[in-house]
Amino acid sequence: MSATSTSERSVYREAMRNKRLLGVAAIAAIGGFLFGYDTGVIGGAMLFMQKDLGLDTHGKQQLTVAILLLGAIVGALISGWAADRFSRRRTKITSGCIYVTGAVGCALAQSYWQILAGRFWLGLAVGTASFVSPMYIAELVPPRIRGGVVSFNQLMVTLGILVAFIVDWGFAPLPNNWRWMFAVGVVPGAALAIGMYFMPYSPRWLVQKGREDDAREILERYRFEDDDVDREVEEIQEVASEEVRLRELIAKGVRRLLIIGVGLAVFQQIVGINTVIYYAPTILKFAGQQDTSALTQSVYIGCTNVFFTIVAILLLDKLGRRFFLITGTSILTVALVGLGAFFASSSLQHAAGWFALVCLLVYIMGFAIGLGPVFWLMISEIFPLHMRGPAMAVCTMFNWGFNFLISYTFLTLTDVLTKQGAFWLYAFFGICAVVFFVTLVPETRQRSLEQIQSDLGASDEPLTRDTAHEREAVRA
Ligand code: BGC
Image (cartoon, rainbow, N blue to C red; front, side):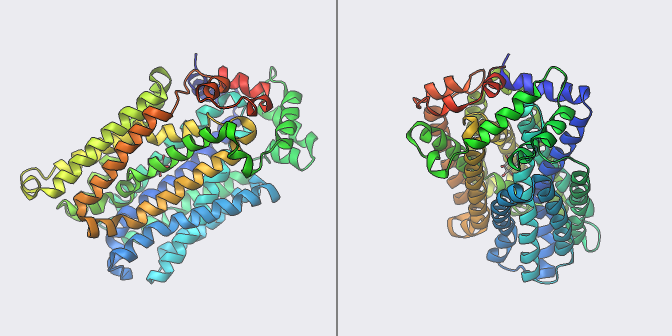
């Protein structure tokens, strides 16, 4: 039995055995959901806020979309420090509060500058929540179910996007529609702040602060009788004393792992996923749809995303990560070529208006079974424990940096290269991605860290610093 299928089943089984873990799962859910909601909500809101806030150029529209990512990057950087200094718990409560004020700020914005400020502020909270959430959860749940939590997070991101698309569609006919779309974000933000208030401090943070007894007490509440809590506290101490410096991430033995992680991060974005998520209604309007049907069809895209993410999570262990990565990215590349062909041919546009929607649905399916979940899963699997935190942080930063770049340039690209040119450019990146996966990315299913590293020809030096517990979890 492979690591993740065991861990996925365990997430549910263990949450049933220990109801406290349900609380952790709920907090995990809200972190991913918030990220997804803010990713999705702008698509529909943009159609209506353009007129009210004078977003009359592509430059203004794309900065309004993308500035959230700049906020997220800054938020993630600050929150890494805040999570160590003030605790993960207090940082997450603060991010929930920032989120609530950001949602209200966006909903009340009266000008271009105000919406930019509101979206940046919201981004700070999104960055903080989606950076500190996985860290906090990984530190609180038993090591053997960490893999399952990663996939669960991606599922919640897609669910957040879907709910945002439904909210956009539901409010569209009402006055002040876009303001309500943002305002709804207050609910998950408040749920995060209130929920975190009732959650404990992370055991790892307590150990870092020299409070081993408190850490032990919390671990005892979140573990079962057969778990060795003393051993876990020792391991936390060991790993904390072995934290790597950034320089060590590019050391010879692990450089290839970092190239793979960063490569996956960059390709996940440059195949254009967030042009589809942020601009789905705009793309459908380019294809000749009215506002309402563009929003209805965006809901289909959101449903397809959730459905195929579930399919992938259930099958990733049977068929392997590489299979889904390569198949999914090939499928989305074909869909991008089709989308470009649609915009290139006016006869196709007249004869088969539905073709653009079909291409978008096929595209999102390809992404949802491949790069969507597999990127996040793999970066949680390939790095040895003592460098996992910083290495994942670097990959996440690249992911958001390129997310910003792509969403900030999409509309300009459609002006400069034409619409078909923009989609064909993403298709070209899709081809490069497939070549990268085929030649460089190893299978991590049913493999221990040692096997993955020796497949890659990496030195085994970092592994000697891995803990026995972690190896067990990977091999389980
Ligand atoms: C990506 C996001 C994207 C989402 C879509 C995630 O894996 O990191 O950028 O919006 O998938 O489902």
